[in-house]
Image (cartoon, rainbow over all chains, first blue to last red; front, side):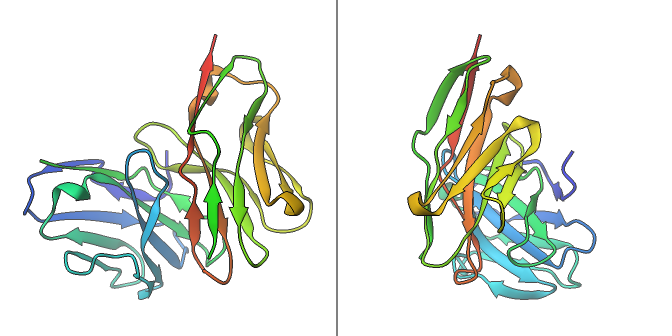
Length: 113
Length: 113
């Protein structure tokens, strides 16, 4: 079982709705990452946190996606409104620091109808 | 910019045969290199990593990889495939310049009787 906790495991919703994903990293890991993995491709980084601060959100579609890590521990990724193209696996990972091995959760598989 | 190329999106081997999954990277600075394994609808599990030192790296489940700077390669091998090895394998590179992990598109390993 993955040590990084994510919920929900699966989410099915209609386009234009709001969706939210939650991630609880390994205790003590200062760096937290959100990735999107489209079927048949490798994960792509959406946002990276160092403690509660965003250090990289260059690939996050900010018109509809938002992410926060208010207390520097768990994190939430939100999409509003969802579009058909957002269907993918959303993975959370954590590490002790940049360049250190990342540990992944089991992901949330999102399907937009 | 850093990038990863995994030759062969699908590889099929017989049980007991040698497994060879290819990974080539592009980086202007010394890289950190990783192999992850992903089972269906699950997150990524770290197989092995190269940060520095010995270029032959041993990982979990009998896998190993060799860093060859002259060939910019980090191929993954296992002497004898088991049915339980069937999964998606992802190669990734990290550099201090980019400060993020870049994944290849993955190779799906099928093991047949």
